[in-house]
Image (cartoon, rainbow, N blue to C red; front, top):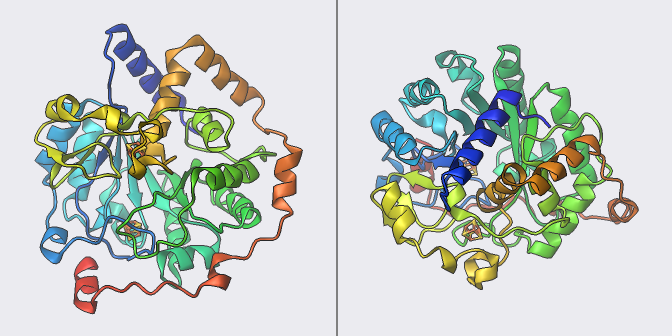
Length: 375
Ligand code: SF4
Ligand code: SF4
């Protein structure tokens, strides 16, 4: 497992304190979106389709700190948009580090080399670089030729300067499991701490609607990817969540585990859906109809979801909150190769790469608004 002991200890003691205090619903990771604008326009993105006046807005550092304090989660993920476009991102990171939050700054890394001097290496700060696969696949996914080379150059620079670095990979239907496994080798050779994986969420606003997976296809893909695992592959994720993705265990969604805060307020119920906003974290917790969400709820918006913001907190709570969970985590640490002959058969089945079936997705947004997105 790639997560450092100090971070695991912080999370484990936090979970135990919540349980001992009898708190039923508690956050683990604050999803802090300081802005929605980005310097890319990926085909599967559901975050950048706002009108220009919204894309120009951003949270102030004080709003970010207030959200972190209100919610109290030990970890803060900073997605976007592209956080490095925020003119005060270094101040935001510094303030969160001072509050001893473990931060995952999610970036496409196009600006990372240029801005890296603004940050100091810290056990609390990780650059989580968006990399969706090998060169051809990543460039296709982010709709930018040369995107992979730029991201990799930034990763090497950050690793060399002593920063914690992970990659962050979203997988879509048609992903070639053999290519993704070769990609894992490439990423680990870059010297990163670990990898983060997620199946894509079926955003209805994303320009490319053809490549989202249902739950069965997600499980099949992750079984092929993560069984017969190589020793040197490290994942910066809960091992029980990886087993959930492989179809080895079942969890119910814990949407309050990763509450999302952005320029509109606290988003109901999770980072992915927008069923209204609350002004405070307490109001979010009290006024959200939690029973309306999760795959078991029958809500069609949740039907295919296996995304980490809903299901990884369930796995973390299971792992640190019960003896059975702790034993399962210990087992996954000792026997981490997951031998599976059926998964080897899946790897030998032919796959047609997505970019062979479909040319690069053309993002049909008016030129002016795309330029706005890239401000
Ligand atoms: S890098 Fe791509 S997926 Fe991430 S916010 Fe920008 S457009 Fe969306
Ligand atoms: S199942 Fe997915 S979309 Fe639905 S509430 Fe949970 S995380 Fe959000």
